[in-house]
Image 1 (cartoon, rainbow, N blue to C red):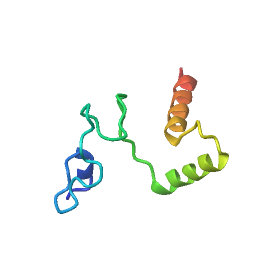
Image 2: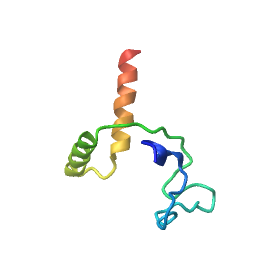
Image 3: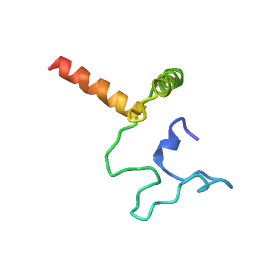
Image 4: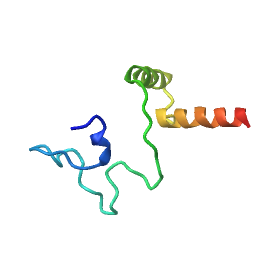
Length: 81
């Protein structure tokens, strides 16, 4: 298996293939996917875990790490304009 083969969306070979939500949802989306287009971004695991801890400790259920990343990127773009 290549380094990023898991990103293809292809089921894994072996006895566990299909056992972790690889079945399409009724409308051909995978479980947990919205209709919104997303992009894969690579972040160091240690950084992401530290951010998750801070978001969880803040206790703001309305904010997720994804929303935080989007807010930061939009602020950066506005600053450059």
